[in-house]
Structures are given as structure tokens and as C-alpha cells.
Length: 280
Image (cartoon, rainbow, N blue to C red; front, top):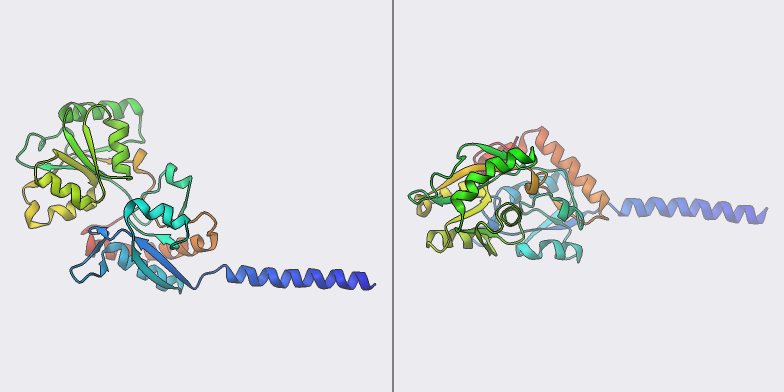
């Protein structure tokens, strides 16, 4: 009888403590890392403060999740290692969901689609790249993709093309233009934009939204987007918040907040403010 009471007490205590543990897994305060160098998604303003679409979105999501958030800047190539080292709790840095990244971290519901393109000197020989105004879906029929890419390969043969290091854009060049172009990787998009402007490279490849932001600057009025828009394949499943694999509660919180921000139009409102387009 005494043994039965002890067993019952142990079970009840176990259930009670399990309930406490479950409750404690819901965070009340997190740190979100961004790059702070990818206008208009995230950048450091003249006042030294972080600004951009993802900064406003992060603050909105944190309010919806009812948690306190601190947003910090981190070099792009250190984002994923630092997340897994628990230096912060989430990444919001225009990071594309890819199979390679899914092997080491988790992602929230995507909050934006992805599309990339080339930017070139509008008076140069690449200004009329084949396929301008069209879209190439890299996840489509392989034979069709190859047919669409070949004229672009011919036009870019021997040219130097810049891309940010450790991005889908760099992977795109390595996958589809290896041996065709001379790829040059940069720590930030600003660096490859400046090298293009200085004539040290012939083109850059980056997210179209980032290129459009660059083209709105007065000192880039002589540049243009040329060739097709690229989506799918190496450009992944959209842009989302990066999270550690074992932070399942935080992921569910981000997922619910992002879905709500999509449903009530907040994401498109912020996109219109910063990116000048809807993200549907």
C-alpha cells in the first residue's frame, strides 16, 4: 500500500514538473541577428541604427509573439555558426531557405519569395543580355532551363561576375556558370556594387529587390537589370527566419506571427514602404 502511494506521488510529481518544463520552453525574451548591410531588407542608417524591412518586421513579429526582442548586427558569413553556438536566437537577414541550410538549422514560415537577376552598366555590352524581361524557373524542366541559360552563358563567357559570399547567388554562379564566368565573391553586396561601378567587374548577381534599391541611388543611374529573373532551384523556398533545430516552440511562435502578419496585410505594407512592391 505504501509502495503504491509512493509510486502515485512520483507520477503526479513527474506530471507537475513536465508541465513546468513545457511552460518554460516558451521564451519571453530573444535576440535576433541581422546582417545590417543589405538595403532595403536590413541596413545601418546614418544614425548608426538598424533599419529596413526586416527590422520593422522583426519588431512587429515580436509584438505579436508578446516577447521582448533585441536586434543585433552580425557579419553574414558568421550568422549560422553563431546561431548554433547560441550567441543569439534567430536570424532575420534575407536568408533563403535551401536544402543545404536546412541540414544545419530550421526555418520559420517564409515571409517573402526570392528572385535574382544580373545588374550591369546600361551603356555596356551586357545591357542587352538575352532573356531580359522573362523569368527562368530553375526548378522547371531541365532541358528547357538549359535552353534558356545557354544564350546567357554565351553572352557572359569570360566576364567577371560578382556575388556575395555564402549566398544562393554565389551558388547560382557555381552551379550554372562554372567555367563560363570568372566568379568573384564579396563580403557584402555594397562591395560588389562598388566594384561594378569602378569597372573592376562586368556584372553582379543578387536578389532583385536589393538591385532595385541600388538602382534607386543617384550614383547608380547608369546601371540596369539585364537578362531574366531567376527563381526556384538554388534560390530555394523563400526568405524566412533562421532558427536552431531544437527551438520548436520558438519556431511555432514565429510561424503563427508571420501567418498573421501576412493575413492582415502588414507584410505587404512594410514591403511597400521599404521594397516598393508587394511580396505576394
